[in-house]
Image 1 (cartoon, helix red, strand yellow):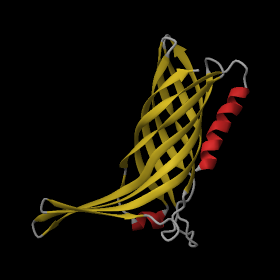
Image 2 (cartoon, rainbow, N blue to C red):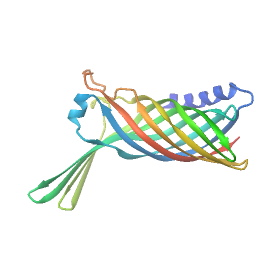
Image 3 (tube, one colour):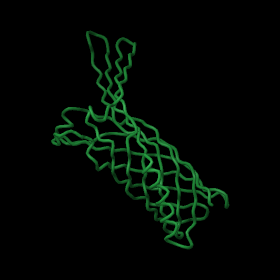
Image 4 (cartoon, rainbow, N blue to C red):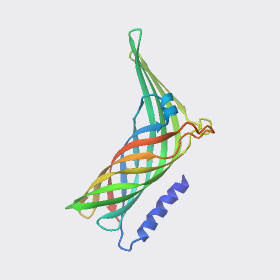
Length: 225
């Protein structure tokens, strides 16, 4: 975790030093992640009808703007990933719903390249770049609803015993719209597709493959330094 934090600040200073005319801005970012896992045929057969799970994200952004058309944006985010599987059926005239979720909390560093155009106080940018995440913790959640009554049970994830990898390397793609409030701040909203490339299966049997996927939507503000 300390390594990720140091890497974030190193990237900021290296990018800033790449241009003597770069403008540095920092600020918060918060939103949601529609998280899901995708896998091979064996994984899909074990978990049928995988659904997106609504999760949270928040963090800090540093924009290093080289010129009006190009910027680099390192981030340090807390983001939840995982998935859920839900099944509803009739048990002797009573509707039963069973839900199983995996929730993993990551500390993640995306480094986004931003290219776009300005129009008055507004601008639009296309975003693309790599990300590196480390799972701080995780849990399994079981939810059972029968006859209008719901029972919930949670179990902490043991990454070694459950053979789940903590490392998540991936790519992020999307777009952002921002609006400048004079010289004091810039408000932005962005949407991204999160493409995990690391196999989450950390067992000796590598025949099963599963990767993180997500659609992240967030808002935030940038304040020039």
